[in-house]
Length: 430
Ligand code: ARG
Image (cartoon, rainbow, N blue to C red):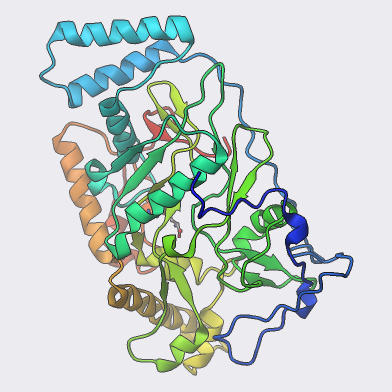
């Protein structure tokens, strides 16, 4: 097992506890809040257990996994033969299908070839109705780690995924697939929504340090013995939380710093912007959506693309239930915030977006802008149409969260998504 991964399970006593009341923001906003550890005190107010705690959710429930539906396996193999192995002679196609049928009869499941697995993962991306970045679906790199299911090895492979996908900012769309669910044995679970996310600590007065969206996850990690390595701050990378199978006690693994590329945010004109002490991680890597291919479910199959600037600037840092930074930025810009009609929110948002885009560019970290990516999505639609395929899309996810009408994706409708379409990335809760 890779030694760089610190497994935190069972070590909770070694971690200093802190009380949120003594997490004091300094006057210099670029500094992290200071935590005063109080190891001796009983701990009525552990991180996140303020006056308005959010319920700590259970790990996602997983239905017992029955045998693979033969019809789903065959439909997938036929699609694979029709799109990829187009030159494969008919007897060979029939032989592969017969072999899969026999394997399912005997074991309740079957093993995809590497080519099938890669194709299945790529088509799952192509079928992702909420994704605007699908033009590149064929470039997805698939890391086949189906032999891996122990939490420590899953964590090590997630770290390796981050390194291979990040490449100092030359991001490569990558998916790592771990052991599938099989009738005799369920696959591992990654509880994190993304491999890299920031902790949120709720204080007794209800305010939050960090990302409010991850207060419940942070509470769970804390309950399992996690403590932020440098004391609680606004951008603490959460540990990986992994179970060997559903229902098994999750284990925690700190991500090594050098596997997590982050960009410090500055503004091309306003030097005060850097003083806000903002940053964001370079890689969005969704880790809790099961991947289903030809009736086989891979519950742990983290995948990443690269960011579209609006995801960070117009949502993560701007949403009122996330970092909610527009009021502070508007103040710094001396905007008149006494009325909505001054459009101070819109003006602050544009400057925040400029900072995000510019900082990623300066750091050499790949990031798209919503104008370019919208045009590319329409190119993707045209290609799909030429290939004789439907391209389902969800309008409200495709249209960017700012300046929608300035982008061509706003001015049209799309094929309705079909929830039964496969291969697909599935809703983690459903
Ligand atoms: N919106 C999510 C986030 O802000 C990331 C979703 C996936 N995005 C992507 N560009 N692949 O972290």
